[in-house]
Each structure stands twice: as structure tokens, then as C-alpha cells.
Length: 114
Length: 113
Image (cartoon, rainbow over all chains, first blue to last red; front, side, top):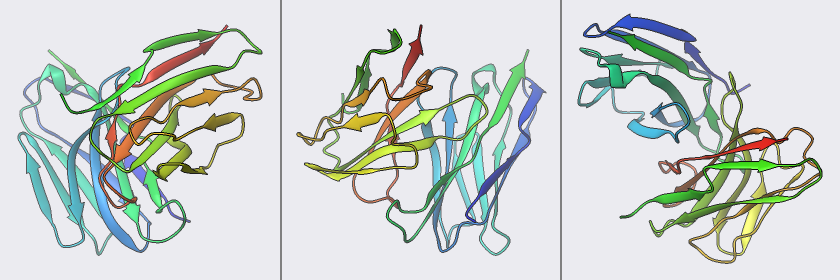
């Protein structure tokens, strides 16, 4: 069964600290993996999208890694800010099927405290 | 500004009433989608449309209906047949099929009174 598992479910860190969010998937065949940031009560905003051949991709203080062999991805946030408080959603796109095999994780809720 | 808009932001409905959620995009995207988001769950697909005048049911289409008469617009109607309609509804669009990145609207929160 195609699945996307994210951990931890929630995380609290102090402002200025780094953190890493995990995403494990079983979607096959694999097309790409996306990380979205969703502020409370808002729509998700894309952070990165990575294909099979990409190992690392950065967007400012956000760095995503992808290991297609182990089917794992991580999102590393450097020098966290209060505005990083949000849910982070991992989405994996596969090939095939009438709905394109797009699988959403449940998200990790990050709280950055002053 | 290019983007995808949803209206209204908040919507209240009495039981037994149908309501329509608006979704408009000026990104010239062919594909549009409707998702439902509940606390602690991943986004679930309600309906999608890959091209004008064509749409397909997603995983949880029961109690919902859509239309795609224009490329820019993909309204969602929540009917009285939807047993638990209170949720956060997200519309998205993409340039082409599923492997393309999706862009999301700001969402509509529907509450049934």
C-alpha cells in the first residue's frame, strides 16, 4: 500500500535552534517528493520539489534531502524563527493510476518558542 | 497578481442546505483539484479536473459535486447528502497532470451549525 509517514507528529523548539523533520514513503514507482509549509488556517505553500536524481535542495533556511534507495526524506530548518511555526507536509507523487498516485503525509506541527 | 483564490474564507451552513465554494485561478493551469483537510489527517482528494468540461471523482466524492465550465473556475458544491461537512477545504491547481507541482489556494473553512 502506498503510504507517506511523517515524524515527529509535533515538535517544540526554541527560536534560533535547528531541527529536522522526517518523511518515509512506500510510493512506487516514484516521481517526485514535495515539502509544503502550511500556516494555521492557510493553504500549503511549496518549499521544495525533488526528483529521483536530486539528493539535496535548499530554499533559504530550509534544506531538503532525499534518499531514493531507502525511500526517506528530511527537511532541515536552520536558525529557526517564530514565523517557522507551522505544519510541514510531505507529499509524494508516483506514476500510474487514475489519480497519479499523489500521497499526502499527515504533517509535522512545528512550534517555535521565543 | 497571479494566483489561486478561494471564497469565502469562512462559511456557515445549516443542516440540510447546499453550499457552493468558489475557486478561481489566473495561472492558466489546466488541472484543478479539491481537497478536504480534517485535524490530524492528511489532505483527502474530493474531485479533480484535468481539463475544461471534464472532472473525476476522488477518494471522498460522496455528497459533493463540481463543475468545470471555464478553465479558470472550479466551484465545489457541498450537498445535504454530505454527512460530516464541517472541515477546511482547499483548492489547488497545476500546469498539467499529477507529477506537476500543485499550487494551493488559501482555503475555506466550512462549519455546519
